[in-house]
Image (cartoon, rainbow, N blue to C red; front, side, top):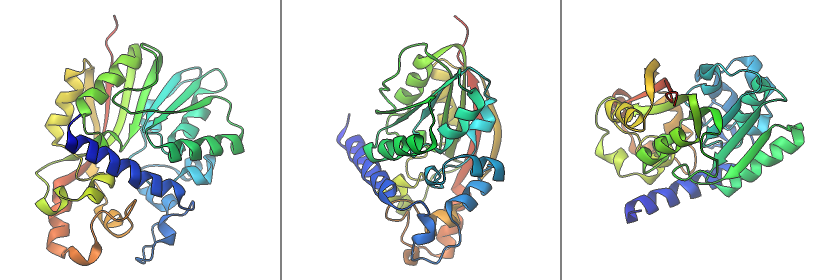
Length: 277
């Protein structure tokens, strides 16, 4: 791992540790005057009222950029892995879909997030979820073990995305499915965003060009790759109420700069399959 990669991982780990230590309605506690609490952000990202109510409230930190659980079309008895599970929101939704015969594994590199997720599971009496701490480039999951891998706005945070997709391929059973919501670039980010560690934590500076992202998935061995949906990413909420210590300090961002960032970034939902042996 290069020094830059170590720097990025430390910044992300520390940023998300801070988030985990905040109260449930993190965004509502910010002093920037935002009205978006996690529930409202989740609605914008594609979650229904029913889904938001179904998961433990403290698991929803408003950190996603889509709804990979709905995208994955989960079935009773399946084993699901969530790459970058955070406080467990998507895992709890997946738990209901796969039922008592199924299993949901959440992997996150931040110990504070894993502890928060486990506490949420204990409070809710979830027996079919297993939260594990580990890097997405080297996950504590056996080969050919899971039916579905989901991820929600997390792989963009990983310095070695190629390795992360290879890990997703490794843990999937032949015929298994990959369902990802993530942030990609439509054009190069402005330099003031690229230089920001906070922007990395907020899912922007770590994003790569859309074609490069899709090529990494194909090179990992996946087939039947399909972009299900592509939409604008709600930069305004992140600039004002960003995770960690702020993506971009609001006073330093001009309206013109904000428009430049918005034109560069998109939210993408995709599906792919691990070919049968």
